[in-house]
Length: 174
Picture 1: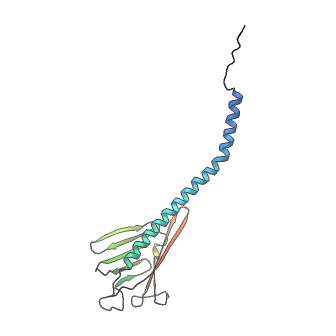
Picture 2: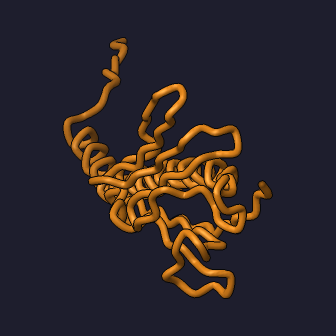
Picture 3: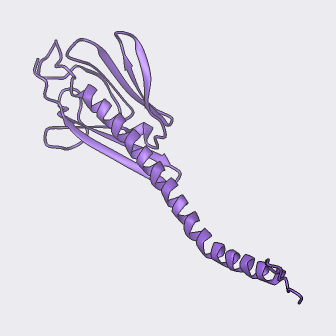
């Protein structure tokens, strides 16, 4: 008696069919995965921009809240520069603070100890960070009648522009 031995294995035709099925599955799954990765990267960039903007806005607000009243006239605040891109003032502790928007950055500087640091980059509105408002909320306030400072930071990221805004009431007593 002869024993028949069967060889086990995969034929070339079976291998080609498996490769075609896998290629079809990949063709359908790849665009979905690609979109998910792109969405994740866009969301991550947006969160990063929002976080940077929020940090810078809170830091600026913390400084502006400490603006002192003028030693010469306590009806006014001790603000030496009031432009759309720069605000310089003296804090309650006597330190002069300068906040400047230039190019794509906002910087924070102190007189004592003399130091300047970048608060945020990626700004699109560095020339118009500050707006000074009167007690009725109207614009065009000067040193004598400023009661609110509105701070706006707009940061650009590849996927868009993100805006952060805060209005602060200046209230520190002498």
